[in-house]
Length: 311
Image (cartoon, rainbow, N blue to C red; front, side):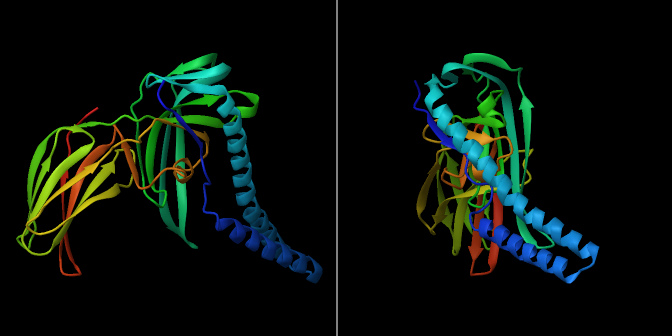
């Protein structure tokens, strides 16, 4: 059996948000009481009451989700036997569930009160509910790209349960499967006559070497994106020094297959809470290299080359 790692999804919001929400709720509660005692207009009392409920609902809802995840993780740790091969999940007793594809995208946006973290999820059923003690992931194509702030996207195979203590819980599978990168050679030039020569080696994951010719500095980044994601995730591979050959590499998968016990409304930040970030993995993402040329402190020029992958 493959060595399977089982983890639970983490918080959907940062920990410091809890005292912020509870603090505002306390202030609004005091304002509401003061308004009632002082005979404030009804519309003012309604606004205070609405905001009081709003600032309480967010942390309470998050607390309920986390309790469900922790309870489900405890239950499933005793039921999941392991992973046979790279796609057969085995349980110690029959469970009622259906296969799904879980899609999620997350980004930071700006609102009237400043930046906020937003995400959207979509669950695509790939079958009907059945009661059984094994599940074969028929297609383990996947992609996950997330930065340290929790922005990015993921498309993961999984299952959704129809069990009393596991309702609204999904198991999301992140295989340790890498794309095969084809060999390629690129020569890129900046407006300041800098030249970068790049050789990409054939094989699993990204491996290669680069050489900078000319004054100034340059860096190479791995870029991952998907047509359904609105943002790109970048991972720095190397800084280049003039006249030197620099080797770079990145494994485009986790070391071991991972099952994440999550809520169907979990955020990307929560799903990747216990994983090292930035994380770029999967065989359905589009990969490219971004070369950032620099002259001095302010001048920057970016060139991009695509990588050819075989799933």
